[in-house]
Every structure is written in C-alpha cells, then in structure tokens.
Amino acid sequence: MELINNWPKYYKKDVVTHYCPGCGHGIVHRIIAELLEEMDLGKQAYLVCPAGCAVLAYHYFDFDVIESAHGRGTAIATGAKRAKPELFVISYQGDGDLSAIGTAETIHSANRGENISVVFINNAVYGMTGGQMAPTSILGQSTTTSPDGRNPEVDGYPLHITDVVANFPGVAYAERVTVASPAAIKKTKKAIRNAFQTQVDGLGYSIVEVLSPCPTNWKMTPVQSCKWIEEEMVKEYKPGLLTDKREERRKDRAC
Amino acid sequence: MSKKDKVFTVKVRRDFCKGCGLCIEFCKKEVLGTSAKLNRMGYNPAEPVKPEACIGCMMCTQVCPDLAIEVYSG
Ligand SMILES: Cc1ncc(C[n+]2csc(CCOP(=O)(O)OP(=O)(O)O)c2C)c(N)n1
Ligand code: SF4
Ligand code: SF4
Image (cartoon, rainbow over all chains, first blue to last red; front, side, top):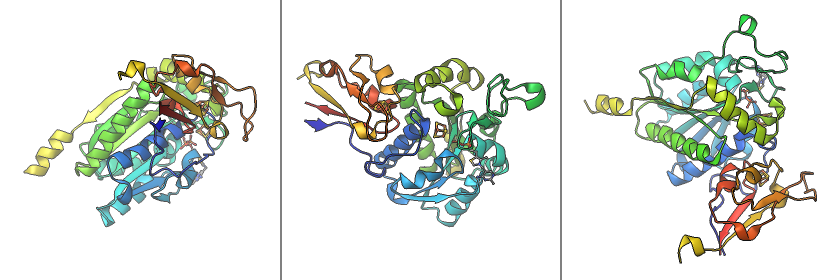
C-alpha cells in the first residue's frame, strides 16, 4: 500500500490546530504548505501572521513565521521584503485584520506595488473575538453586533476591498476564490500558486481573497456553511479573476 | 492496470478528526460515515463505512481542514 497524499513538508507533522471543526483556515494552511514544497520556496519563505484566529499559525507551519500587530501584516511584509529581497514573503490576514483596522496598510502597500503575496481569508465576521460584524459582513447577515441583520442605513455596505486594490497599477494579480467545495479548493490552490509566482517573477503585489467558512460564528454546521458561501456570500463577492497585469508588468520590466 | 481496476484504501486518523462532516458530504461514493464512538478530542470522527467503494478521487482529502485522511493505492 502506498500513501497518495503525503504530509506536506512545511506543515508540522501531526499538527492538531486550534481551529473549530470545518474552519476554512486549515484548508488554506494546507494549500500554502503544499505550494511552498511544490514551488521549492520553503527555505526562503517568511509568513506574517495576523491578529485573528490564525494568530497561532506559527505553531503549525514549519518555516519562518512572524506575528504582526492587528492589521499591520503588509507593513511588516514590506519591511521584510525590502530589507531582504531574497525572502519569499506572504501576509496571511483575516477580513477584520485586512479590511478594518489594517485598511491603511492594505491600501498603501498595494498602491506601492510591494512585491509581496497576500492571502486574505474573508469569513465575513470577526471570528476570534466572537463573531462581531466585520466591514465584509453581507447585508442582512446576523452577527453578535448586528443581531437583526446588517442594515446599510446604520452599518453601511459590505466593503469590497480586493476589488478596490485590484484597480491599482501596482497590483499585478488579484483573484477571489472560495473553499466551499473540492472543485473550488482546487481553484484556490491555482490562484495562490499564481499569486506566489507573481512575487517570484518580481512583478509586484498579488492578493487572493478566499471566501472561507466560520461555522462557529455563523451558527451553522460546516456543510451548511459551505452552502451559505455558494448560495449567499458569492452573490455579494463574485469569485473570479479581479486583475491580471502580469504581462504588462513583464513588459515594463523588460524596457 | 487502469485506474478503474485499482484498489484504494481510505483511512481516517480518528484522533486527528474533528467530525466536521465535510468529507462525508463531498464523497460521492458514500464511503465515509460517522463513528458512534468519541475520539480523544471528544468528537465523533468520520470512518469508512463502505471502504470497498473508494475510487481514489481524493475529494475527502481536499476538503479536510485537519489533514486527518490518508488515501493509499493498493
Ligand atoms: C490592536 C488590536 N485591537 C483589537 C484586537 C482584538 N482582535 C483580535 S482578533 C480581532 C478580529 C479578527 O477578525 P478577522 O481578522 O476577521 O480574523 P478571523 O478571526 O475571523 O480569522 C480583533 C478585533 C487586537 N488583537 N488588537
Ligand atoms: S471562530 Fe471561525 S475563523 Fe475562528 S477557528 Fe472557529 S471557525 Fe475558524
Ligand atoms: S473532513 Fe477531516 S476533520 Fe472533517 S470529518 Fe472528515 S476526516 Fe474528520
């Protein structure tokens, strides 16, 4: 008997994460570890963890990981990449981290076209702190701070931060994906691979937004959570390529 | 040997499974079900209930957030 799915080299062996059953963070962690192995980037990899449920990711990944203050991931990533361009720098962030407290860092690092890769886990709530409304919560979504559903007159509208930064010239690659089915997970891996390759090729900022289940705070089973992503969340956040300026950037670099 | 005749063996590492049920939902061959016995963490883990039906499609390993499933050829 031969094992088909070998344990990823850059994921600590036999890890038991603190994530809730069915949480999307675990799926995306596996994808990152697999890609670093497949792309042979593990030795120079440097991942910035967020404040949020992924705060303990340094216990799970088996390569260099640093912790950031809430929302400051891309500022740290900028410093690391500029000081040591040979590093392969990833900023891993939730939606509360990236699109609320970290909005300034997100906007300006993207606008500067920093040569870093951002993995953005959008679960439409503040997971770690108990399911409060996030800028990304969808209209009508019930959270602990919007128990009657998000009301645009009081709470404003869902923030499409990845669409915003995709418009910037410095953002070479942006895609939105989900982890709500095996087929979607394969697409997610492909998108993150493209984002990583963008950095390897020195073409500028890349970001992949992953619509990801938080069954605990959504008060759904993991299976219901996947259905909610596919039936409700994608209506607000349409998956697909948001920008691909890699060829343009390649031409700029050549002249 | 064509893929069709190949034999696959799926194993759930029961003490690493959080019983989320995603693998059970996405296995189209209904190979996996829920164990009646709790594991070390206090979850009812997934377990193969129709192991002979496994076609090695790896849908379960794709969706498992906890890397709790091993699929073997042979
Ligand atoms: C400066 C600061 N303010 C507030 C907090 C509290 N806090 C911790 S995690 C978090 C939100 C996390 O939500 P998100 O980024 O969406 O990640 P998730 O937990 O959903 O993965 C907040 C507000 C903090 N750690 N630091
Ligand atoms: S609270 Fe939500 S985001 Fe945090 S570990 Fe649980 S399911 Fe995942
Ligand atoms: S997907 Fe993984 S954690 Fe969830 S029930 Fe199946 S084996 Fe267990």
